[in-house]
Image 1 (cartoon, rainbow, N blue to C red):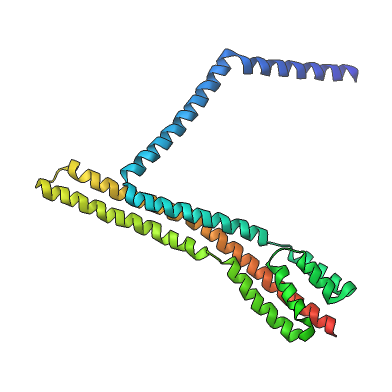
Image 2: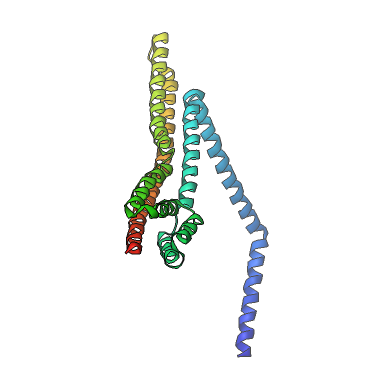
Length: 252
């Protein structure tokens, strides 16, 4: 057993030493430096190319498209953070409310909901607050406040859809303007030369491409947000039905 342990230790030491020699060898260091320099050069080339194309597209329409992207992403990130914070464990909340009702009554259940974050807990609180007026009043309060919470979830989402529609339209407008500029140059020169038309067509294509890229990026975030809202709303509706059933059972 000792011999086996000694052999394994020796092999491990030799492997570590070889790895250290390979890593610290001039050839390996040179290869690593070349790879890092190549990656940095590719990144710089991509950034420079993107900046160059952005300038060629014209600061007017390209700047507006960029503003659409920035504002759309800002709203999307804010909504994603808000929706993630609004997501709660409805099953755990329902069990806690039911236990609080059984042990401490409505006041204890309201206190439990008050100490829990999320729209489902707020809906539960409104329903419990109307419990003294009867189950029907509590159900109406749950439905009404559910609509309020749904509005809070969907707040500012329409702006993202606006930017999704606006970005490609601005790109297409840049396309039309670029083609008009190309025909103006042809008319002024009185001759059809590729060099005269190339600039206008380039601007037309660049604005269209950037507008479509912005729309695609925002569309991905928009679909995620809508799916998240649908999930939370379904959870709210299911939990609300469960709460009404609990209140009906408490009245019996």
